[in-house]
Amino acid sequence: MKRKCLAKATASHALKLIVAGGLSLSGAEIIQAAEPEQSYSRAPMAAYNALMDDALLGNPYEKPVWNLHDTLHLPDWLTVGLENRTRYESLSDTFKPSQPSPAPRAGGSNEQIALQSDLWVQARFGKFRFATEFMDSRALLSASGSNNTPNPPNNTMVDTLDFTQIYASWADQNAFLSGLGVEIKAGRQTMDLGSRRLVARPIYRNTVNNFTGMRIRVLDYGQWQLNAFGTMPVLRFPNYIKTPANGDPNLLAANANLLSNGDQQWDQEDTHTWFSGGILEGYDVVKNVNVDLALYALNESDSNNNPTRNRNYFTPNLRFYIKPSKGDFDFVAEGMGQFGTVQYNTSVNNQQLHHQAFSNHLEAGYSFDLPMSPRFLVEYDWASGSNNSSKYRSGATDGRFDPLYGASDLDFGSTGIYGAFQRSNINSPGARLNFAPRKDVTVSLQERAIWLASASDCWGGSSCSSTTSPGLIGNTKGTSGSYVGDQLGASSRYNYNSSLNFEAGWFHLFKGQFAKTAVSSATGTTTPGGDTNYFYVQSQVRF
Image (cartoon, rainbow, N blue to C red):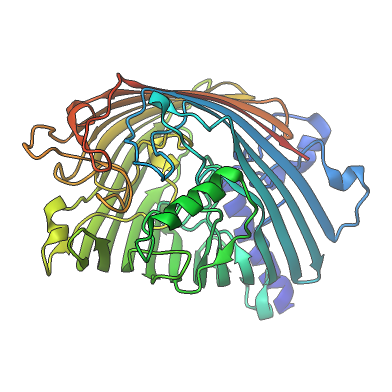
């Protein structure tokens, strides 16, 4: 009787969560009988297989109408899924500086075809699951770049024929008759935690973040969820090593040639780096306000094939939010801190700096109860930068926020060969309008004005400096200011069915004073060209 009561409570809580996510189980029989509009969440435009079901909450995505399981008449305990995303993207008048030879240029290709293919296989035996994901990410036509700068693909674009995930797990939706769901997962895996701003499996990027280790998840349905993990990040190969440990330029050339030739090299765990932490999520803590509280620790050191900045960070994270709901307001207020040490290589010596940085995301929106389901929101993102000269002073404090393993497209738009902005040294308000002119079409319009949080620091990411990676820095006379520019973006998605989707998008960067006059840390010159235009069109096929 106790198990029945707990199971009933568990199902009730689970139903609340699923309904909040957009999947109404109570209408399942009606859907079969009357075939009304599909209420499943739309699977993302990425190799994020719709058959990768949540062991505790089930699958929020609609089953692909063309699927291998039914076609091959596979048994219920075996799941097989195959996906492919093909994207053509074009970039004109890039903002990115170029690196000197023999390193691959960072100027960005003027066009590229990005291919992402994914095979998912899972076997279930009672409460145990054994799963593997095999992904192939490639970039074609990227040998020439804007302003005639060569650009061999890097490991954000290319990771050929490798295991993205391979793990074993145990899950019980009512562990020990407690009413709690418990999942233990060990092996190589991807993670999406909290808002995904610090730990995420990127959706738009052609390759993904993955980790090897153990993750424990405890879920009190509709009340709270706890995730705790201890992992080693996985290094994607081949990789262009920006700062060889021994300073040997031949190592730069060797890795550049390996990257250009496309030689196969299996990904490896970074055994010298440990990434761990936990996040506690509370649902409807005060009325319909949800709360996340997280702490992540990154302890990084050099290895032979992966020289690092020896980051040793503690990153606390607090988020309050209300989920969007028709005819109601919603909001997000998220704050992130970062404390520890980091090392920068300089022409003088290696400086181990104290690190203290901060970031926040604020968002307020309203979902209109109108045809086309419009939702309008305003947002603001800020992430601290550093005084560029501080890296050369003993005992100085580095203030450039590091987004760890988060997703940037969530807030700043498309990545790929564009990837203009990250959660580092940025001060950016914006607005967005989303609507659905048809049940199978969604449209998103966005605008962002971008300044640097610190005009004396570089624009280009958390690791950019004069000797680690290319970036744009304010010139010595201080005339570059902090205004980077204004970004306009538009994208639209068409869902032919649950197996075939299409999407197209366009972003235009009106370059501000900083983008026009700042100096490249790699070449010592300004970046030529007019405003930047980025266009993409992509398709996603699921089986």
